[in-house]
Image 1 (cartoon, rainbow, N blue to C red):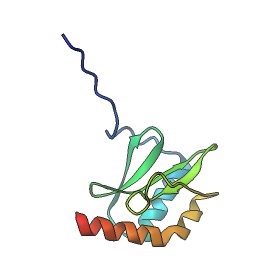
Image 2 (cartoon, rainbow, N blue to C red; image 1 turned 180 degrees about the vertical axis):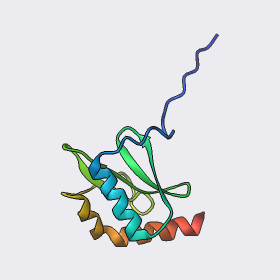
Image 3 (tube, rainbow, N blue to C red; image 1 turned 30 degrees about the vertical axis):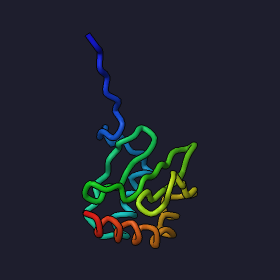
Length: 105
């Protein structure tokens, strides 16, 4: 008999967000005025979901502070930030991401 184990990759987990991650999510909500939902598909970051799409992935802890926009940037380009308010500087990437999501949803 073969023992099959499935990985947890891509499955939703408990949100368990840091205060900084919650502040980033709130800023994304305000900037987009979209129906975003927080999701933790990975232990490594929090995701702002627009429908079934990852609009932004971000992490804000003592050791790591970054945001990325997987719809418009290839690879895993992490934009380093110093505070949650730095997210406001990425409005153009967010708009491009929303455009792609709306085109293909």
